[in-house]
Amino acid sequence: DDDIVEFGSGNGHLLVSLHKVGYERLRGLDYSEGAVSLGRAYAASNGINSIEFQVADVLNLNNDVERDVGLVLDKGTFDAISLGPALTEKDKN
Image 1: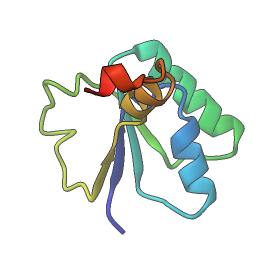
Image 2: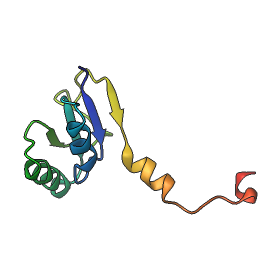
Image 3: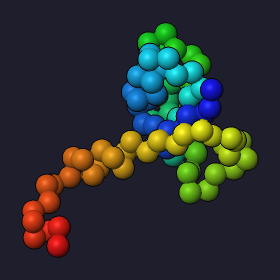
């Protein structure tokens, strides 16, 4: 029942995937108006109009964005880490 918010929602793929498996209270925030438009279009192309996409700077959120949230996702950071170069034993020390 909690809101799920994705910071840096980009093209909306993660939120659409979450919706398809049953999550309903979804919001995507991105600083890029183009990304927000793309997310809305991708959701609509999947027949989904209930995901809320907003242009927002997550470092300077306002009251419209700061509602009760059960889960915050930041898939972009995960992608950057998982797609980065592999660490060597020397790097780990």
